[in-house]
Image 1 (cartoon, rainbow, N blue to C red):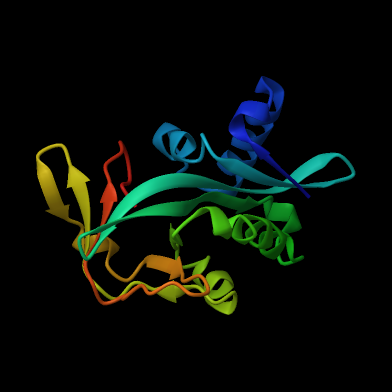
Image 2: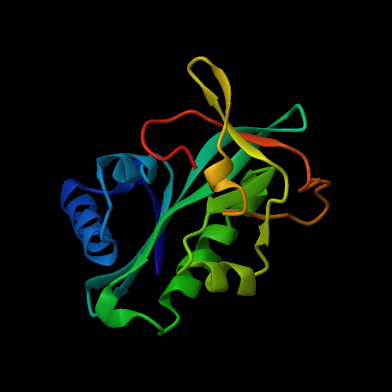
Length: 173
């Protein structure tokens, strides 16, 4: 398992990561790919082959009027032939180890990923979600309940408050 910034990954390794993500997800698109770049990547290899990946990128979010520096988990995937062997937990442990650099860790969970995250102590955001869109705040009710956070030791974060993420193309959460 290694952790490296996007800038330290060569073109061949980035292509290999993208291939893994395409194999792991039915609907992984170019926006999803862009969302996973620009941060730290946790990469798991077996006998030199890429079997799991996840990235942690910085985003700004407003929580109850406070601007927080959030480590946002993206592109967590395990090769379909290597699932249920603990690789996703290895990836998450590496990303969670980067938590001291942020006010909060967050992610948007799929139904399939929810049990993994909950078992690791991630908790649902209970307040309403929104995005700071190009024309101002826009509610994202379809994302309510799918945003999870890992509240770090000593943090005072009220999960019942509204949370707003910065805008980006594609899925905002």
